[in-house]
Image (cartoon, rainbow, N blue to C red; front, top):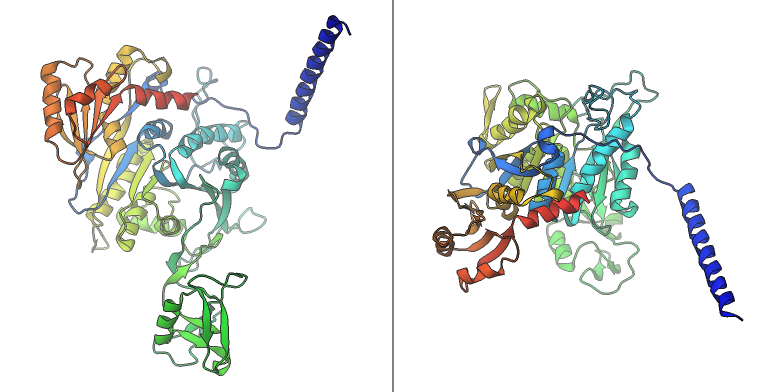
Length: 566
């Protein structure tokens, strides 16, 4: 066969392969299943549109207690910019995120500035229920923020989102697109709580709405929840006291691990009941735990001693429980509102606040170290974290983010948690202070260009203003010294330091002064130095100090910001 014929056949094969690829792509597009919406670009204030976001502390609002408890963070600003900053300071460090975003009911105050129409129409007003882009604007708003938030989660991190029927279906599809469908679960938050006397309104509904939703998004599909301490709830009874136990009524719980075939391990052994009948199987208790319960009269044998051993669970005792997909014993916004009234002298300055009991349950089953809420509202999440720290003797740190629309951050979020920290009076009674400390930051902007187009001048300014970002990244929040060339920060309770030389001009006089200061510090030292390239050349200044870790600025900050924009 002539060479030209072979070449023609190859050409035809490539052409057919190209057509097949095109048809497959078309078929995939036509049969696509998932969430689609009109992307509504978001407009921000002119001062932030083409600048680099940073954080600045408001020192006069700091609350410091030398009580060994954590220092929590409150950030005032648009959560999009705050999440951008946190992607530098807390990338992969947050264990639990809880958010209570606007439900997009048409009357919940959700506003959105449409960048396309901003110059033509007075946009940024509340989106009414009949707005043609109501769902698209909300999804565009949430999509950007959830993607930023995902990168903050630790390898086994979890995000919980409260939502109702207005956007639940859309939000779940969006979360599955971001996290993967195997990493998203949905739970029910029951709104009928008889202990509060709460009865849900029925006007205009086909049925009485007694629930909202909690979406759970996991970074790792294999993540599992812990048990929580609580009382077994039997609404139809179930407790009795046939042996007149002085500890009161009880219920017998099963301790057989049904379905487990393994014949090894500390929980596979033989139990002989009082009638001499032996039961060899897997149990929920180890042999030592069983023998201790037996001595304590907490093991019950039915049928006059002939039955399988069961564990006595007392009505007034807290036990380790597995969380149900129905959150039906964590109260409702009625409790949340009453909590606010107590703190604010009988007034509730925020509509439909979540109860601290709901957040504490989420903390109980996840056991986090760092908690974030970037729709902070009245500040319930931080209040719940401090309560949980006291009750469970934990040391969790909370980060809150909210804008200051209608002065909510300064007059509600901050004031609430300040009073919880310091104690307050309600109905002439003093509520004991919870202690803890608090740092207050605001988002701010530097330079004249966005991070992707940052000039040398922008980088120089960023380095000079990055101190709070670097201190937050290392959790060394307390400024110890500031000069025209450097800053030094420290952890409140530990010998952990952050030293920042932020001037481009590394003159021997000033830089040597900085080096001498760092050498005098005892403990771990995170040393940031302005550099246009590799910081390796600065390591020799610090000798063989194994505790000094040399890092560069400002380029690593810009690299994170650029990756988010791309």
